[in-house]
Structures are given as C-alpha cells and as structure tokens.
Image 1 (cartoon, helix red, strand yellow):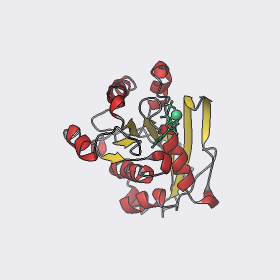
Image 2 (cartoon, rainbow, N blue to C red; image 1 turned 120 degrees about the horizontal axis):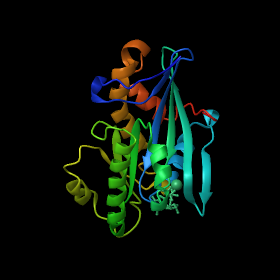
Image 3 (cartoon, rainbow, N blue to C red; image 1 turned 90 degrees about the vertical axis):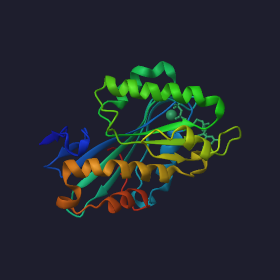
Length: 237
Ligand SMILES: Nc1nc2c(ncn2[C@@H]2O[C@H](COP(=O)(O)OP(=O)(O)OP(=O)(O)O)[C@@H](O)[C@H]2O)c(=O)[nH]1
Ligand SMILES: [Mg+2]
C-alpha cells in the first residue's frame, strides 16, 4: 500500500511517499536556480563522490549544448537499521526562462529544494528572478514555501567578480535558510550543501515517519549515511 504523507506534523507537510509493503520511503529533492548556475554539475559531482561499488547512473532527460531541457535525476538510497529503505531522488530543473512549465512540473511534490545561485555580480538579477520564480511555482504546485526544507548555495566561487561570503551573508541576513558556498566544477561545497539540505529535511521526515523511534535512524546517521561515501546509489530508481 502506498500512502502519501501530507500531515501537518512538525510544521511541514512533506509529500514523501511511504510504501509499507516494500518498506520504502521515497523522497524528492529538487535542485532549482537560474540557467547555467551549476545544478547539473552539482548532481554530477555528488554522483562522483559516491562509493564506486554502489554507484548507479545519473539519468539525463534531454540536453542541448550542455543545457538541461527537461531534468537530470540521481537516485540515492540508505537502509535504516529497521530495514526501511530511504530513497532520495535528486532532480534538477532546466534554468532557462522559457522552460517554466517544465520547472513547475518537476517542482511538483518536492520535499526539499537546493537553490543554486551563480555568485557572479552580473548574475544578481537572474538569481533574484529565479528565486522569485521558485516561490511562485511553489505556490502554484501547492508547496508551503514557509516550511519547505531549503538551502541556498552560492556556486562558482572560483570565478572573479563575486561578492565576499561576508557581503552575501549580510545581504541574506533576514533569510531563514542555510547559505552554502561552492565551486561545483571542482567539487567544493557540493557535499556540504547536500549535507545542509539533509539536515533541514530530517526533522520533517522524522516527525512524519518516526525515523528515529521506529526505524533507528538518527539525524546524524541519516546525513552521514547519505553523504560520507557510504551511499547506496540505486540505478533506475
Ligand atoms: N567556473 C565555474 N564554472 C562552473 C561551476 N559550476 C558549473 N560551472 C559551469 O557552468 C556551466 C553550466 O553548468 P550546468 O551544471 O550545466 O548548469 P545548470 O544549472 O544545470 O544549467 P541549465 O541546465 O541550463 O539550467 C557549465 O559550463 C559548467 O561547467 C563552478 O563552480 N565554477
Ligand atoms: Mg542543467
């Protein structure tokens, strides 16, 4: 039996899908952001970081000149002590403005979002428009933006013409979300961003599915198990 959890426990209404018979919880994570900010690169680096013995494949649905036209998908899994399989499906959206319908469809039923911003100063407007677009599309697909687990990554820290971390933190001081800094092309900050997201996601999952009490899966084990090379990547998931 598949049940969709949409209760209000823990202040969040996650869309995660719990299949009791198969002992499987499926969670959707979406990497969102403006065109060319490095969403696909984040996923490719996460894939490279995973243990080779358990490595699945990234699925890329339609790409043109390196630009995502539909989405990329990376399935990541973790077995809880109870036997429960926690499956995360990491998606990217196409950042190009024209693909808004696709973005909305992919954002639908997301349980958590990483917003990948381009750190270059000349991308400030694109970042802001894309962030507004995220908030608008979240509302359109019925996600509660106020409780959605979200992390904001400033990518491309290796490039010139960027503001310092201190300046960006000051600009975003009112925002309730964790900020991370990355150079995804070199793999820096990719795992840290994902760990921060898992840290945001865990309390909401735990409130709905009693991960700790019923499945012996603590926050630390959840983050470490999915981040520290001890990752069970499931192809085709
Ligand atoms: N210098 C630098 N380039 C990066 C970094 N991350 C990604 N890139 C480059 O930026 C370009 C776009 O990266 P993608 O990962 O395809 O960006 P995307 O967000 O998936 O773009 P769309 O799919 O079009 O929305 C590629 O040429 C990447 O190699 C980074 O940290 N530093
Ligand atoms: Mg892409």
